[in-house]
Image 1 (cartoon, rainbow, N blue to C red):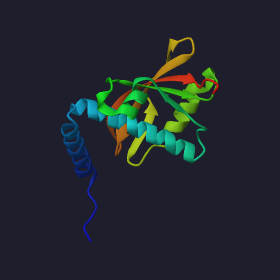
Image 2 (cartoon, rainbow, N blue to C red):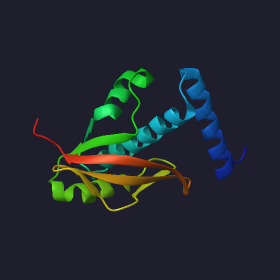
Image 3 (spheres, rainbow, N blue to C red):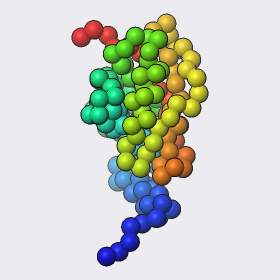
Image 4 (cartoon, rainbow, N blue to C red):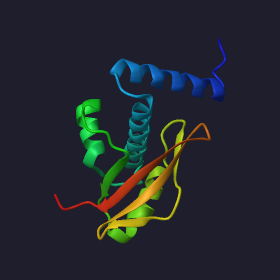
Length: 147
């Protein structure tokens, strides 16, 4: 039986697949990689719901449009997420949720939050693959609105 690929080979394979997928979809590698990174973050949030760390979340804004309509939608660099908790608990709830991770990807808050509106904060999420830095994702958090 063949031995599993080591971390360097796995990272190289993933980067090759990202490059190939970007070309196949006619988009830039950067845009595809950004979208891939945001998708992995959303997968971590889904896992957090599955294991009971997070009750729910709502994806909003440009990232939601891109998820629904693909790369034909406008490009976005951040993720807008609503979580059904009070404003003063957003960062704590989100930080707990992302620590669940997703496969070989791990996530951690990189810096303290900063207000972007009266009812929202921006956090930076450090994403790692196999323990090595992969991406930084801007996330705007707000309390989920009723309904």
